[in-house]
Amino acid sequence: MGSLSPRTHLDWLEAEAIYVLREIAAECARPVLLFSGGKDSAVLLKLAEKAFRPGKFPFPLMHIDTGHNYPEVIEFRDRRAAELGERLIVRSVEDSIARGTVVLRHEQDSRNGAQAVTLLEAIEEFGFDACIGGARRDEEKARAKERFVSFRDSFGQWDPKAQRPELWHLFNTRVHAGENLRAFPISNWTELDVWQYILRENIELPSIYYSHAREIVRRNGLLVPNTHLTPPKEGETTEIIQVRFRTVGDISCTCPVESLAANPADIIAETALATLTERGATRMDDQVSEASMEHRKRQGYF
Image (cartoon, rainbow, N blue to C red; front, top):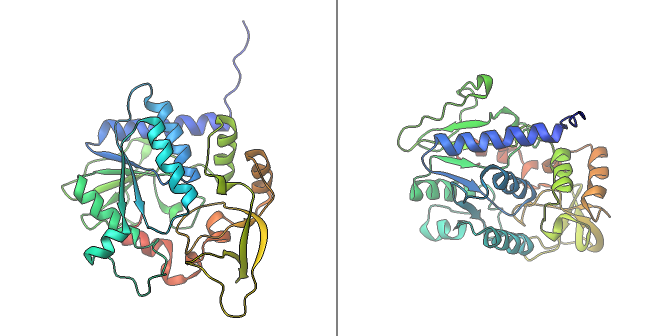
């Protein structure tokens, strides 16, 4: 008899993520999967297919739309949900602004942090008791403190010192009315793992994840795209270079990196040599101490 091929690290990570997805679906009454159209949520969508197909997903998809997203990502989000035939709920920060629950100092301010309010409003609207997302521990220090299942109180707040034990991957999913959970099936994945899985599974992504020409200005070590939300400042010079996005969020805070990588294999080679995390290399808002991830998570941010 021939020997079975040994399982790779991607096989172990995949099995772990599918286990978490199935546990949340089995134990929670009204879970929802957060799908923005970004690379991590695209991977999560593929894992959900493996966990639950050929049946329908046991949860809807939801995106909290800032209104300042890159159009390529929104087009991809809508198309993938339609191709899968799954329900996509979209709730907008714009609506929260209209209701007066979100107030920005300036119209062009980053809306990334404001998503927390809209998310909590959507959780209350639909009665969701668990939000499943593609956050990973290697992204940022505050995310590294999260467990697979993260408890949030009735105000949507997270206390890193009051997390539930997860011995032997057993999850305590009990919540009272108004409380909810955040679940992170790919917690143990790295950026490199994500791209290796994208290559292995041939996962489609928005085009801006690959090398393309874009007009930018160089500012504080970042490549800031020239857009209506992020125009050049006085004295800055624009240039057109080849770039790609490592992570995608609000236009007003997400920058690309210079790159000629046009496919997953090229990106894997680049990522293996990267010395900065995705967020550290590309997020303008993460460079402001008062907008730290942990502060935002304590206020209800995903």
